[in-house]
Image (cartoon, rainbow, N blue to C red; front, side, top):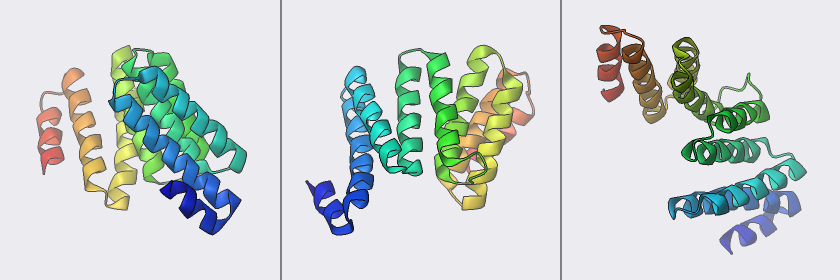
Length: 168
């Protein structure tokens, strides 16, 4: 109801943008309740809405959320595709948290396929964005991911240093 009221104040396209935000929030709630199929349906509706109004931020967020659902269900290939679509929705050149999150998520997927070099690259790109934005919690996620990749790839010295930096 609140989303509808806020949207009416800014006209139809504002209403649709608020609807996209509300749909993504609803999808997260449905996912937390354990209904992954229901969450996927809500996120897919959000994708349709965001495409219709050309709202890149909502589109990126919906793709990222679809990636999370795919990852939870074990579909790594679909998760990767959704995260890549999330980045493309905003534009690879855009330095925003909406690109840093799917980059970190791609970093988390790559080691599952034994690709530690790509994982490091994704985490480093995410880290560059989050550090520039001053987002300390997202910076810690990227550092922690780099630490995990370094340890998994045999970086016995670098891993603990990065873990310490992530906790700082």
